[in-house]
Every structure is written in C-alpha cells, then in structure tokens.
Image 1: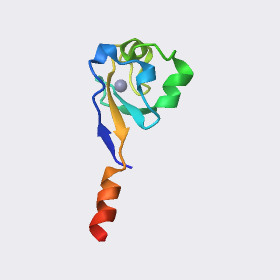
Image 2: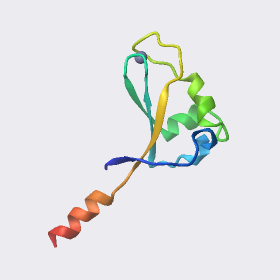
Image 3: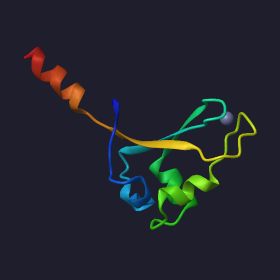
Length: 91
Ligand SMILES: [Zn+2]
C-alpha cells in the first residue's frame, strides 16, 4: 500500500491519538539523514494518547549518530487508492 504525506493540522496541535492505524510517523535525523518509520501502535505503547507529537519528539534519538537536537518528522498515511485505480483500468 502506498504511503502519502498527510496534513493533520498545525504540528504543535497533533497528538498521538490523532494518528490512525493507517498512519506512520517518518522520523528523520538532521545529523546523518537516517530515517525511521514509527508505526502508530509503537507511539501508543510509549506515550499517552493526549501527548502532543512535538513533546514525543523530544524523546526520539538517532541510533546511528550522536545527534542530540530535534528530530524531523512527518505523518504518512497508507492509501489503497492506487491499487483501486489499477483494478478499474483493467476492466
Ligand atoms: Zn543521526
């Protein structure tokens, strides 16, 4: 299923509970450009549902380099749209 960037509003307003099971957090390290895919259930296991993602971000650390600053992140949503379009064009 393709993942597409999705906007859930202003970054400071997005909370853990705003993410659906179809969503995924793509976290990128500004220090070494390593990127990590974090599933919604992993956020629920670690943080309270009402926690803003900008607060959760402070607990994220890069595993590949000693970068200590803020990690960059964006929400991606799995979309079955492309598969459905392909199925209809075959008919
Ligand atoms: Zn890094």
